[in-house]
Image (cartoon, rainbow, N blue to C red; front, side):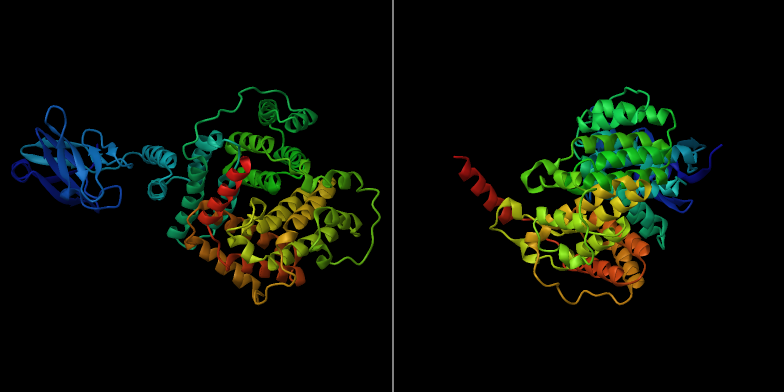
Length: 528
């Protein structure tokens, strides 16, 4: 039936060419384009400037069929509303003329249609990595009654195979942004969290062609899956995952399998472990419909992971792991005993740690926080050192997010404790050259709960350009909050809060132009 409103006389519009009128709380524009009458939103879908001030253009036949917003030169096809230049589609309204009066149907389409349109536009905005459009189309989707998790599922499904090397930080941080969204105090802050996570996925996959996952499926077999992952056979490993999902294998069992693959090496700066925990947390939030794209992306990332225990710096890891059961423990080791040591020396000391796994973990977690309080910030801004010194805050914060991930993995599969603790030792050894002897003063936190609440609030307007930096902030805050809750209030919680406070409030240099140029010249000169 529609909701037809009288928009004035045809004679008046013919004389004036265009006219603005209000209906249903919105401002609409009538245009006489040749023999046609067009009704559209007067607000440009880009930034809301009035299209009544726009310019009509003609097609090949000379008939007026385009409308240009003169503020930013977006152009719209007046037969379809499609953006010819720009992004968002212009909404058109049905028009009828009766007895010399113009009638416009201002009724909204069914909610499902509006949601589908918003999702289509959102995915187009993601394709272009257009953050403004991403926010607007998410807002349109929510206004139409869309479930935020359905919107994120659509993004995950569309972009999973656009990650050249598998799961990246955009997917990994999504669960933590969802947590921020669910606890938002108002609609704007809720939209920030959704926009941030979608924008990061767009950033990760910008201009990346689809790299389809293999379509095969085979019955789940744990050893077959682990062997395929070890041999870097992505398609074979993915077929086992598909088989597991088809057979509705419990996700907890599948997560333990991925945990074993993620910790089978000291690899990829801990990303494999972090991504494993975050992937299954994300599936829990988005629903099992998201399991296949998320897990196939995770397979790809672990297959492509840098096996760092095969490079000289970490070759002591595998022999240390082999000696785990036979190692002689000694009491009395403190967190400070794990600082300023080489990787081999750190691993030897981890082997000597006594107590149950949780006690050992506490000591290494405290040592990681102490290392962050000793990070030599001059290293992060150097311009004249070799590539091996390109170390910044993200290198240090990975110690905390990795620790949080492996503790959660070991809670589910205690057999992984040796790998987890020794790999925490690898982190401590690798950052040792970039630490000062004394902790930076002045970062203690008096009220931990108030501090965490304040830093969560600051995430809504962090001011960081590249999503990689904001995603680390949200992940570190989530990980630290979990570890503080796990550890209870005391010296360890105080250390974690102080380390996080220093990280969040000392600033990050996001671009190193002179460093990059200096290293490029040195590299090319050495090529001969």
